[in-house]
Length: 349
Image (cartoon, rainbow, N blue to C red; front, side, top):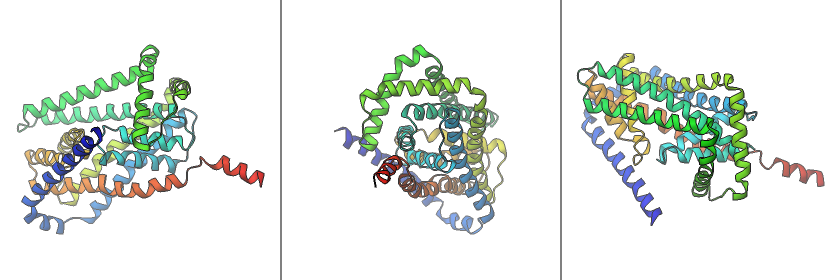
């Protein structure tokens, strides 16, 4: 019964998302044609370029993290894995678990041990959440000075900030507290095993738990010793969020609307809150409505704001999602995991 219920929840979420979008677009259909005819292609291109730079920054943060732990893959593979593992979460709302499992799977096929994959993903997640919490905090402060902002909106934002900070603290404790880590490590291994089975129908043998724990400890020790080298990773994480905001900025410029930094960050912060709704894939529908409402409260025309958020959705989510399908197959075909076998066969020949 669990699988039908899970698929039912996905279906309900998709129907809700499409329904919200359909209603919004229907009410704005008269002005949409006029707005689209005046769209500036230069800013559309800049929005697309910013989107490409987002995923490059994601890949480079993964590449740098693996390099700190003494593991190397090509930069192109790191960027491809970051793109594919991120976009899979846009379709399957699992609080990042699906993308996490796919990243571990693709890295493991390139001889990166599961423990190292987990360590790299955890550290990057902490940095991403921390920077996002700062962005949402800044957006909430900016909204505080806007008279049209409701108390409920501010309360929701600050509650999310608090939640993100708690998550960051717990994950950091897992990384740096040996007693805490030893207590939760087996549970983490079981969770990773469960996700891997559901996504790839392949279990990590239980007798590899010792190897998994040793790899995780080794990765954490290396990060401790080379923590000064985390600067590059942090820079790439900040670049990731910067270019994400720039996608939205250029989307507004494309429809002929100039948005100040304060208004842009405030609307972006609210939009990011809605993407965490589990039942809706990437907050589809809810994000567009929330961001449009916030921008409208701050003096931007509703229809123009809606068009800009739709452009943001297509450029940041839809186009990379389509591209990632082809990159995924490329990553699968280019995996070096069978190279030793081939060499042995050639030697026998």
